[in-house]
Amino acid sequence: MSRRVVTGRRGVLATALALIAIVAVGANPAAAEATHWWWSLYHVDDAHAAGWTGAGVRIAVIGSQINPDLPDVDGTNLTVDPDPICAGETVITSDPTEDALHDSGVTALLIGNGTGAAGTRGIAPDADVTFIGYGGDTDDDGSCEQEGTGMFGAALRRAMDAGATIISTSTIVSLDSRDGTVLSEAIARGIVIVGGVSNSTVQGLMPAPFSYRGVVSVNAMDQSGALELDYASETPNIVDDTVVVAAGVDLPAAVGDWTTVGSTTGASNATPLVAGMLALTAQKYPAATGDQLIQSLIHNTGSTDHDLAYSSTDGFGYGLASLSHLLRVDPTQHPDENPLLTNQYAVAVPSDAELAAALPSASATATATAAPTATATASPADDPGTEGGTSGVVLLVAVVVVVVAGAAVAIALGARRARARSRSAPS
Image 1 (cartoon, helix red, strand yellow):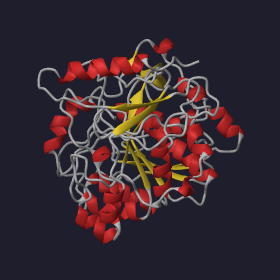
Image 2: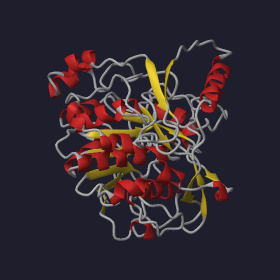
Image 3: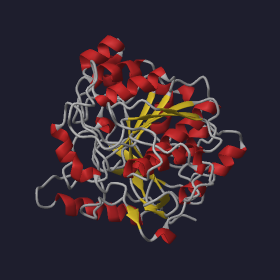
């Protein structure tokens, strides 16, 4: 997640979130270890060669600041909304602020041309991307107050006005119950919202937009298919709200200035990759609705077909997101309803009443799509969705989590190490 927390009327959460956000996407001086390993893992070259590049799909990236003059995005279909959500702040900057470095890197993972310092090529290079920013350093001074909604809701409204059908956000901001009205409208329109989870639970996980109902929450994994480590405890970052997991550990990125290359890790990286996978799928299957894209995402994790399986407690959710598996299965075979409306998360936003007002069938949908209890994961070797992959074994694991105050972290660590050993190393 972003290292900057921008606060609004729910500033009481910002203090608790600050410890999470400061180093959530930190730089690793061992830049030589960082590679764009996800590119071959997901067989992006094959997808692009087949013509699936995100062309014609409109994506909004919600963040804080961006440098649109970087060579990374030269010649791409990038539009920046210069008007900050937080009054008096700046969205466009050439200064290498933490926010600008982070959000420029996140955007490059979607549409980068490979010419920047980190050599990042985007998973959906021909998509039309609009960047919407809260602005730079923001104090809890009321500058982010919005009429009738919270700051995330305001950004979401801007994204809808820009015509986005997929929204990617890798920034934690304070929650506001007023966001529910706008979020309900987005869900009713079938807009896909993808949000990165926090990169630490030890520091005290607080609810954020990724935990809203209907949102695709994304956690990060390394090359072996293991969850990223909680930066505070160095134990697996198990987030209960996770929907899918994607590549996000030890990726090259500009750090310090625009020409220095370092290594970054976090759900911030995994989030645009999932958004990009959905964009390529939307291009290939234009008749599919946003809700059907989400259905396909969770049904087609891993490398082989399997029954829908889910765990809310092991950090993997429905399993490992797979570009190739998504592209080979027509999403229109799935129900046209958002499968993530169950009230299983810590924050019941939007409320049942808001969903019912925007989407009359919401109550029935939430009941009908209650998630199974097992989880499906797969080896990341080849692509966790490549036909004929050499190690595409799907593991169906029933997870029972015993929450005991002194032993919870140790239990989680042991389970995750065992899971990592059960996967084949990438080829």
